[in-house]
Amino acid sequence: MKLKLLEKYKDFLPISSNTPMISLGEGFTPLVKTKHLGEMFGIDLYLKYEGTNPTGSFKDRGMVMAIAKAIEEGAKSVICASTGNTSASAAAYAAAFDLKAVVVIPAGKIAMGKLAQAMIYGAKVVQVDGNFDDCLKMVKKVSEEYPVVLVNSLNPNRLEGQKTAAFEIVDTLKKAPDYHFLPVGNAGNITAYWMGYTQYHKASKISSLPKMMGFQAEGAAPIVRGHVVEKPETIATAIRIGNPASWKKAERARDESNGVIDMVSDEEILQAQKLIASKEGIFCEPASASSVAGVIKMAKKGIFKGGECVVATLTGNGLKDPNAVLNEVPEISTIPNDLSALVKEVGF
Ligand code: F0G
Image (cartoon, rainbow, N blue to C red; front, side, top):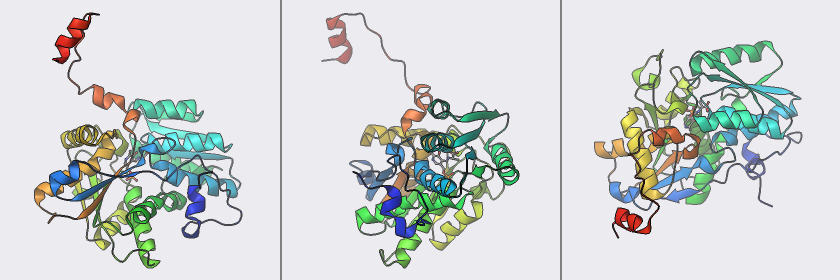
């Protein structure tokens, strides 16, 4: 049987003899060496594709740890605010391991696939007439006052689990990359990766550390702008966040690694999403593509000298948000039910 993520990295995780070693098959995701994109920029570009996790996003790495600890502590229910992926993941792990899940989401701003996931896994889904930041404020308060465990990334076990992606990258490359590009929303993941890299460095598994390169969407870029964005807007709904919970920690990761937190436009995000699919055969959701949009932006700026090892994380599966694509595609031609019409249409 395949090794479980919690078992593989137990020496680096907050695991005791009482922690249940649960799994839905998370982690062990592919690190794909790009066939075309890296060459375009003269770098060795790898994509860490997190869309193959059980619920289709990187959240499962953190959720398995958070749910294991919640069970260990005797919890009966968990709660989270979400732009979609955290809620899908919390709902799945709660369903499988006999906890009640309450997920609180901004009304009308969740990609269709993610909403379907939370529903089918049987979570109590509540929509708020507000944005993610409003939802997070509420669930935080509820978890302080009622017997329910918060499984947003404010829960340190979430970041502990998520750092395993950095371990996997190093275990595959046998070194740290020179640069690591990530989308930034609530800023937990960039924090978690930095924890992972620095822990492996301390354990002498790597002799260098990557520069952490975080990318927010232009309409939801509080860290870049240096102030809370009251009304965040972006097509990348997963990172439509105006007041990230791990703001300071992400800044620390940036500064300690000599990295950058910058922003990309919705247009750049959609172009990158299309490029990743059409050049590499990988379909990621819009928020995920902001990492590669960041690589493109930095390449244009001339930061690469040539031959650098660069990893970009693709955080979620494109199938979660088909509308983001279908709203953009040109009209599809319809032909009569006739072979010659097909031959003509294709241009053989
Ligand atoms: N990419 C995707 C696909 C996400 O779902 C998220 C966050 C991020 C990137 C950003 O990661 O928040 O750690 O900086 N989604 C959260 C959610 C907020 O509720 O699913 P971050």
